[in-house]
Length: 248
Image (tube, rainbow, N blue to C red):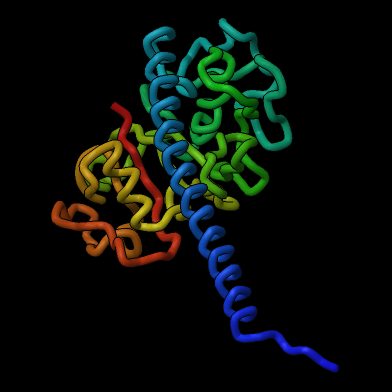
């Protein structure tokens, strides 16, 4: 004799499945929220490290002209993908006050992290060299630090563009690595998440203050990067934002 499930039994199964699904989704939201909080802490730690380095050595990491006096000279300078830095031996920067502002000094953007670790201000090992895909190639965990946010990474350099407050300022960029390019245009968070971080660190607006949401066409509701009335596209759930945080 065959026995089928009763309606009560089926209802109980559906309730259990619903609870499990709800628990999983809630857990994922909690994990993501924790990642975003960690990213805010990461920025604060890196900003403190850069300013502490400048106070101690009188120049910015990556740009410092006498790094070799403190940590000895590397065999190959500037470092390359074929000749990365594997010890404290390092290379000097140009000392022009700008970290990697042009084609010939892009390597300074990666030396930043090698100098910071040499100074004991940042944990990890960074090879100070460009990635395999050219002078702009960022590789998270190799020449720039990874974030707790999935696929996220941090970079620091001079933002020599006319992009609002980024013009002629140094900034921390929060995005993900991009083969053959810097990660300042490769999104890693959704607009609501960008707004969340911006609110914690600044004014919650994508085009004003020290925290800038980019690119404006997908992260904010205005294509004009200088539109002070712009807001984040909070209804969008896509991963469309990179944050640029001006160093002060």
